[in-house]
Image (cartoon, rainbow, N blue to C red; front, side, top):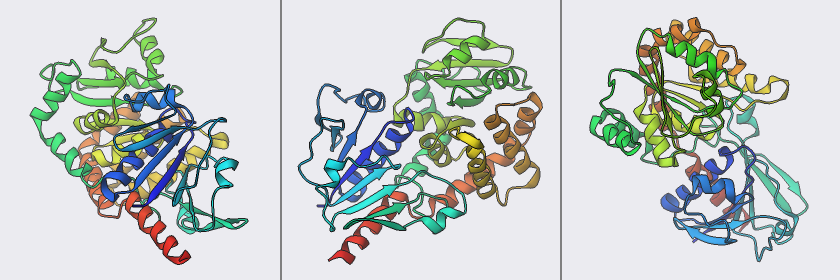
Length: 378
């Protein structure tokens, strides 16, 4: 059995650890890889991995060995393959134990920018070691997207299964029959998003809206909109045609169910962005804010790729909504224009989901790539 080490620095709340945890589990379950996941912040990781004991330096959860990674960490030996997630920089003491036959992978951030295809699978030399760059992406000339083999079908069953959705909402202490005709929207964003403007546009929408917001750093902005000093999970707030439900912080499995159950999903970063694609529902993506507005370039590249082939009016409405949300200047007319095209966008998004799901997934591509590198070293 192959042994992989994955190194993860928790630099953006849940995005990095979210991707690494999903990847670790998929490599174990679908490919039989023995995984050790090194994490530098167990306290944050525990929110996504509730069984994690932050007092233990090493433990085994869901067949994955999880180890604390800090200045006191000592390493016995390097794994057959080591995955350096998002350029987190391997510790010098680990590099010192690596030999030329160890495979070193730098798993990069996801982007739809054209240059990704050219840089995917390149390498740089570090003494006797080669560092290989593996880029996720939206074309078959890249490393693909992180996707479990059954996630699209599972989400499709939830989306079409009224009883499954009802059971899920009851699990969250919500009444599934309350205003069942309302448009269901999930809201997960960075705090600097124009949240108050969006909620105002929702409240003034011509249709009833039920908005579900998991407990994250945006709760202060939501509370401010409703004229409250603070809010907590379990609260239900209403203004005009908007009913907002504050959810607890959800497990990855439950978050997937929420995305599949909603009609529109607001997502951010990388992990929830990918999960929204597999949910097959219209979504608005907020990229991580970067200096010199680099994130807006990244957003435009994705919009060009994803909405290529979409009917023009609906495509323009989707692009306008994405860019308004990312530039923090959203208007009621932008939101209403998006809603007016939601039927077309629903059909088109489902088609894009199926098309992307027909490509090999990232974990499979990664295993094939590592095995090829290993074979070449023999």
